[in-house]
Length: 226
Image 1 (cartoon, rainbow, N blue to C red):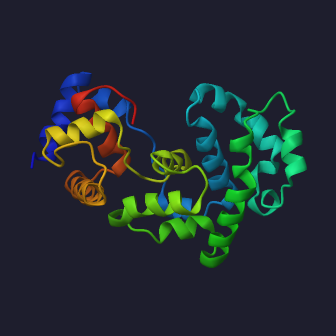
Image 2 (image 1 turned 90 degrees about the vertical axis):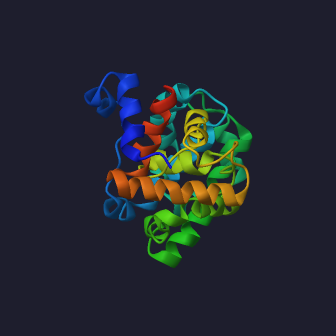
């Protein structure tokens, strides 16, 4: 397996040095602080990811303050009670993205979040019960329990919320293949778990969070945002 120092040096060379690499690394929030975040923090990030999927992220981000105002700052216990009539009225609001299928996820996902949060003392604490070694299992469970969090939406939701995670973008997958972690695009459970273990190992070797390891991998072979 290629030593992490060599991978990071490859990324630095492509970007023009260590300082240039530092500028592209995403912010990572403190895990204990995230565990204490209110559930509305996570429901807002989850819903934003649902709307971003297949759409221009810039458009969604520009309109998100309007979503926050209209949907009561994404308080899950309020939004789980949204009626179909209320959602139909939201379809008439010009400041919102009027996508019926995605709007319908709000009360459904709010109800699941409330249930999990009640069991764990908050949704952030429920997330915190999953270790780094279980990250891809967490992705799978999020996709199973919530609406429209399949594919890469679960890890992208976590990244939006500030939760430390890697992303399997095309550049990251290319790097994983180049450095001998997988032979092809990972689709099998065993491949994803092998990748998860390797990210944990690289984090320990480098002292960096997964989000930084992910971004550095992408720049070691390309320039996509991860």
